[in-house]
Length: 128
Image (tube, one colour):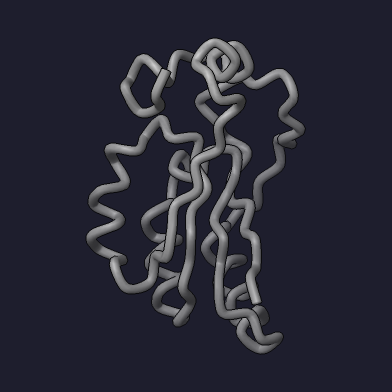
């Protein structure tokens, strides 16, 4: 079973349709440890890490360490902006990280860039 972990509301984009809130727990790693322990007891074995942009969480790498330490496989949902930075993460967690999902808006650069209020296509990460 999969548990979706919305770890942050931070994002580097300003999408007009986004419904992100602004709350965050004071001690995220302590709360995460408890959640993972309870999730294991309930039969969860897979964590989907998402946000906002999960990579922007101040304890992102420590969070992944904890997820792996507790024996979970995981995936990450990202807007793709920091994709180059994920290379290190993919190498470190090769056996536990099963996939990365990229969220995009539309199939052409004009639509995506308009919705995300950015120019991700110009980074060469998405085909025009």
